[in-house]
Amino acid sequence: MKSNVRNPTQKTEQVGWMKVTDAARYSGVSVRTFREWLKDGLRYCRLRSGTILLRPDWIDTFLERFEVCESDSVDQIVNDVVTELIR
Image 1 (cartoon, rainbow, N blue to C red):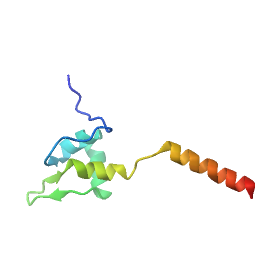
Image 2 (image 1 turned 90 degrees about the vertical axis):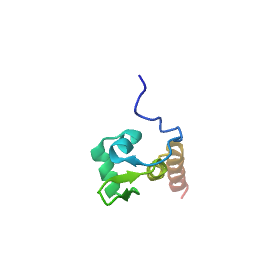
Image 3 (image 1 turned 30 degrees about the vertical axis):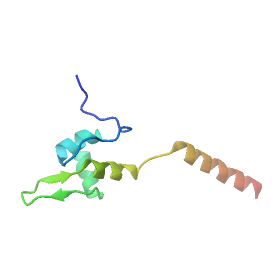
Image 4 (image 1 turned 30 degrees about the horizontal axis):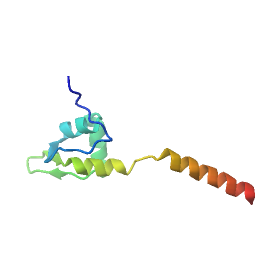
């Protein structure tokens, strides 16, 4: 059986628009969490009917703001400590 959760390291091949339920599934989060993201600035379109539509690349762009590069942060901490010790 194919999983409904996408691998976040893979670029999307999906073209077009998604409703909130499909967008939440695409992101691997609950609809409730996804609606919080909309409040937090995730780009979307609202039709006259009230339906919210999103593009997969908008979701990817929003999530990339939260990317954590562990090696960079560790290196920065080490550099800060060494700098303080040298002073």
